[in-house]
Length: 275
Image 1 (cartoon, one colour):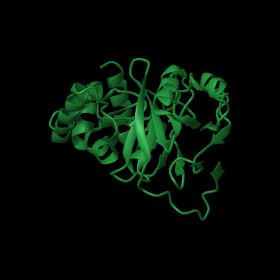
Image 2: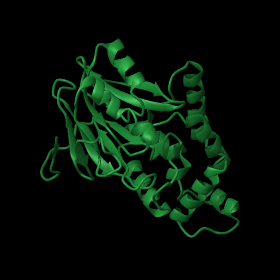
Image 3: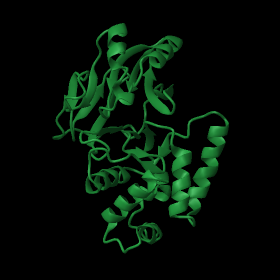
């Protein structure tokens, strides 16, 4: 269910004992995130059903709910089959008619309560983050952020429906979350994003340090995720548009001075599209 933001207490900043977050691989590079505890699970952005069904069976888990960040098929395509196979469960998603499977519509400031996941349940606050799509949302709570395709590690999503101003503002909202917030995004794009970040800001030692860690994780067959908000502030060019080195690179690529951080963001996103 959802409740009103008025007078409610903040969501705890830590994850209760016994709750784990595990990736389920899908397609070429998608992650479906599985929040599990006590034999029950909630999945985030199940673009296909088969790997979710296999993971639930292997873990002896029952499906308690589904969280959806946006309407793209690689994030919602498995919902109908999951519900058909396992029975109806709550499906929280944006108020977008293109997401026909959602049973609970959520918007900015709503709180999603996941009963039965952990001893006291979990809660996630909804943050509207338009830009990649017009109705994209993120879910934040317990020190976790499920950012869909808005914020990637060292990158961000393409602007299919939004403007640079919208996308930049959405990323600023996420960057303002506590630095130790763990970022669970929808794709394994980190190495490619690091290559672009190095082209934009070649003198950034934090990028090199994160690249070494990501190389180690990927060589071991592990996801590069979760990242952290403080890592993203230090490495992600799309969160660093006000930094002189980033603005200078963007202006040089554009061949003209850029007026403000939004123009810098727009140039970076256009550059990344063809990088």
